[in-house]
Length: 357
Length: 259
Image (cartoon, rainbow over all chains, first blue to last red; front, side, top):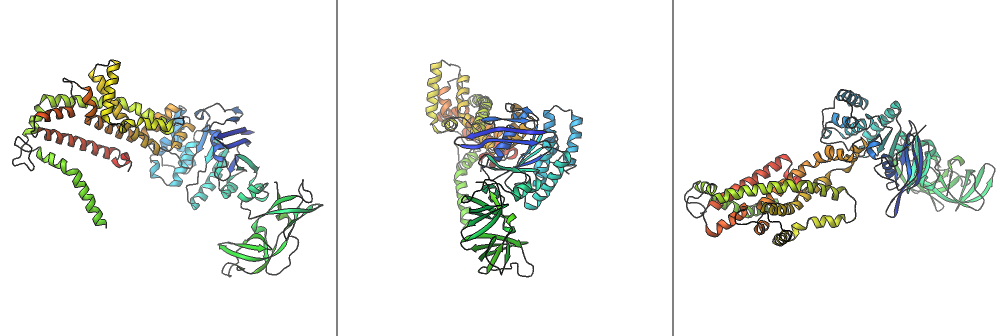
């Protein structure tokens, strides 16, 4: 069943199109993430669902009802902001009870609901404190309780963990994931952090310039980016412009300078055409010995950067700059090779992903 | 370096405070002219000042005027400040500049313009004239301080209230108003002082029977030079200090003046 449906939404600010004819269906109970760099329109899209931004054209439906002309306070949504946006002059309990009070719930029932909501976010007994007396993580949990206690049709989260430090952010991510699955709520999450998106989501919509560039499961987005933009944003280090040399059977032969690549065949390729391919750095294997050939290149190490469990090498392979990443070898001072070493790079045909132009 | 800096600050403070100290000390002289330091000390000029009908009546007038003008200007200023800070409409910056004009135009010019305008409109009632003029000059102070509070209020807090089901008016009353209350109180106290202290506008709008305290002091000084003026000044200084202390305690003066 569809919980939220956006149809042909467009929002313009002056000359710029913040949202450009965007359509999206979010299933009931689904956790969907809008992922993209700042200015891609992800927050504007979220705010359009909330009614905090009114689209120029298109419609927003929640639970099958067109809410395009309905103001925010009648949409029954729960929203969590990056700045947590708690009411500083109210206690935690009053913050959480605010939405229930607006719905005219009786005091006894309200208190019981508030208590349940604070238990849910693991803050029992914090009701009488003020937001300023809580840590950043606790404040964000109160904001979550406040948004959930009204039993909203959809939970909207706008980079809620952006202001937290890395360790706390990871804890909160695990908690949010577990909590939303347990209560089965539909959630729309906005972030620019690809790891966060991969970890939390059922589906990810990668956005660019007000449009959805690719929509799919975390694994599909990560392993099979459709466009150069998505591949780049998902951290694919090797984006290579190549010429189609031949198409035969299940594979295509590609050439990029002296580099020869074999890739799985995709529709719409013909010999002589130019395309982009993506190869993740960790799919490139390094050897001291070996020969150049199909899906193999000789090159010289330009730099070796040790970052803990992984080491990243920049390699010059006959004028083509390639990046390879491997698990750091223990007992070698971190890096197997040094700048200036001659190496051979190898990769499997399945590692080569042909991108749409 | 720091020591030199402290010395400079000290000199500056002395420069500002010295005249006030002189007035306060001189108000306790026993002789018929203000002396610094007094050769004999007494409270007699306080008694004298408080027994003068002209001071007491004009002080009552000034207090009433300042209170009424402030109470009328505050809701207007709140509405305008909210529109300027949260609203998005053409001419917003122009409106902001325009509303601060009474701070820039010489108040003697404003006084004259109001006199001419009120005469043209046929407003004869002194109270009405004074209240109208004082609402006008207190207004920009209120708008400024309330705007300063509103700018610091995260708009997402108001948005959060709306997502939780609060209609716009409810959001304003339950969330916005309590959170900008310090700014409103500070603005009201500033407005009160500005009105109470005003000479240049009142000069054009009062008559022989209705006077404000600053004007009463001026006209008294034309014919008398006894320490009762110093006594009144001292009482006003105490009043202002009390207000400043209350401000600091209630809302934090530093927050209010935006330092």
